[in-house]
Image 1: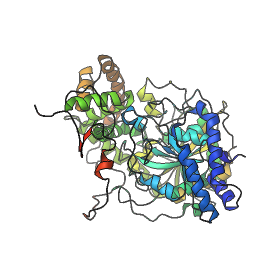
Image 2 (image 1 turned 60 degrees about the vertical axis):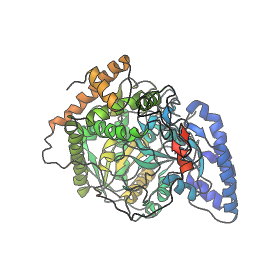
Image 3 (image 1 turned 180 degrees about the vertical axis):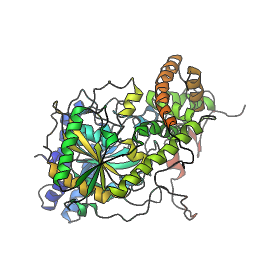
Image 4 (image 1 turned 90 degrees about the vertical axis):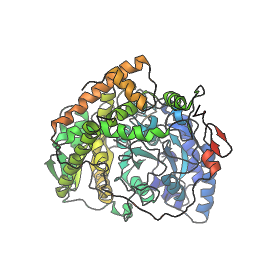
Length: 485
Length: 95
């Protein structure tokens, strides 16, 4: 195995044993990038010079025996995370030249843990999309089939992990934006409980839904990343002060006797046959671990996408009001007065999908419509959360498909926004209710596209969720294939 | 409820966006599909249900009002499209 294709824990073991160096790992990653990036386009910007300088420093640390949890590990950052000194573009013309004067909390934490930043990954513009096609820098391609989308909005991060263009990556998830691309690219995607990871420095899309999480090659790596990412931060008022356990300690523990709920609403018509077959096998693997399976009902499931279609744009329209061409971002040159500065800068700076969402958000919050749309959606959001509260009184874990279909073709859903939103139909509920969820590979279609299964747990139950995912991973022993790019 | 091209123009105006006639048509059609879909929420009786603005059930978070380090003026101005001295510069507002 070449260095770039190894996991965090494998590389860390090698570093500790003196078998490799941070520089060698980083060079291997950039060599791989040189070979496959022209076909995949996972990155908006590479940070090769910075990474090699960081690696040289890491090697000094290693020589002194100072090895931190991510020392020498090449990590890719979604370009929605403010990173001091390099552009943070959000895949938008609006912020094409924006250089953040500060680091996001998670970027600080990763750096403090020894991570080496490989680059900033492609994303749908302001994370609005499920295919990474709305980026102003052009689409990312799925490493398993470059005619297909990698999912989104963290499609660059998922593709980079799948194609071994980094060791692990960070993404953000508002309605499935970590888990859906992870599923379509055959990697692990983890969305933590709302409030567990600081959002400070994550450019906001929908503040009550956004959460940062890792994309990795296996569950152990997800646990290692969560050990670094989780934790209270006073700079994010929604970040919760809670005890963070060592998630790694829970891996390898038994899950026999656990009750796993299969919500019948997630297995209704419309889901691809091959996806259902792979998920069915996943259920069998869970049973092999000694867990019990029970059918449950989450009665408000069919309203999740509708609620999301109101709440996410409403919050987005208000969050993106700050993009006004005054303090940062694009300013239209031909504007003659202040109103024109706003209007022309925003009109030039935003792409079609962002405009669509801002318009629907502004409409649903406007005088006369607010109660019918935003108010109603917020009430149904309560009902959706209650469904989960109810289910978790009985179940330890809920199991669903991550996505209704495998990766679709580039361009297939661009003209049909509603169809695009529906590709997140199984992932949105976790954001609306704030619970943690993980997508993990569970098989392949006949055409060789990866399929993911999603596990959900109660709020702040990430330790148990990772324990369960690790047990599944071992029991299922899904064949480890590599995409041929 | 059906959204007209004029409604789209109105909402775009609220959000300080200019849209072309062609975009008006396309957006109206696409947004109507979305609104039609959203209409399913009206099947539900939500009388008396407390709306959730937030998934965590957090209430107000307070902290001491202390002076802390923050971006200095120079750093805050580095990304500004137009500045003069310590200020952001904009076109004349009052005639």
